[in-house]
Length: 394
Ligand SMILES: [Zn+2]
Ligand SMILES: [Zn+2]
Image 1 (cartoon, rainbow, N blue to C red):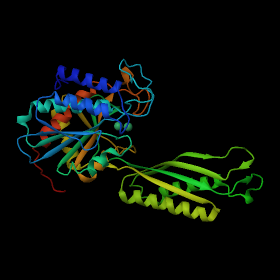
Image 2: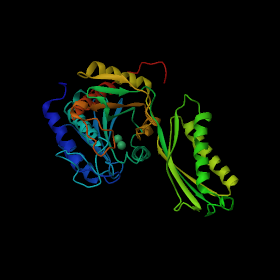
Image 3: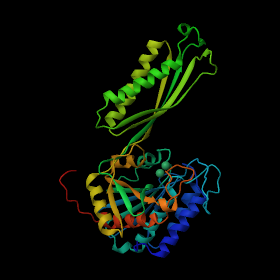
Image 4: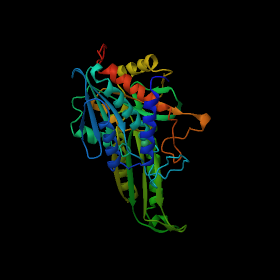
């Protein structure tokens, strides 16, 4: 990979390692955003800086005209994880870690801003570099959108490092890429008592198991098999002694879906199920549903354009087609309003033992991957800011 100069790669290493050592949780990215702004101010190019929310920033680069506005997005927040790597630039903050690669995403986007700032006069259209807060809470993207700052955007592009792919590979999906993710919690309250006389109790544990069965039945028999969905119950807490029937049980979990139709259907069906089991079992059952990330559904003609860019313009870069993933990213909220594409940048290197999954306390990535992500940002900006649409379907 010759496209990224050694100087720029050294910059990326410095940025990534500083951010890695100084991680900040979602909505607390104050030092991170100050650091980003300080670096942006040192670049050539006339960047206009806008602050949509207290811990996010958009750096706007005006090209020769304002025909097309291309947004390149990076997330900047870290996770509440206690780092277990041996890196020399390991997190200096106990219990907080960049375990999702957002330090690398930020470094790649800074590299693109620096490079394109130097080429300002050669760029048609506008390039906006969006450094977004609070991705891990799945709230940042919606907050940015609600400020109206992206209302002029024509296209939006984002990337995520991923160790499931080797360095040099990019994982792309046309259309469905990552599922929506919503949370739920259920509180079953009834009558406890002696376990030998269950008929005098409402047996909240049994009711809980019935709910789980009914949820699985809905996914298996009432959702179109072509419309992927999952309901996972991940906590189930009840009881305290082997001869006492508890008077309550609490369950919680996660719902994954792609279409808005199925997302709402599952939410409403789960409510109907809990209401009916409350009647049947003489329990009081309260279900809370919490909206999470929207599904990442890429714009097919832009996925194709990006795949062509990778194969034609990125040294040793290779685009591979991937299946939709049942994990989530709040980038999906942008794609509901703005055409765009999100993809994975391969960052795995099994020979160097770099293969941990995202959110693992030992997660790190092969820093060579940043060259590919940065090069793609640069090529995407150059191509899409003067993109002439030539397609049959909108
Ligand atoms: Zn994450
Ligand atoms: Zn992430």
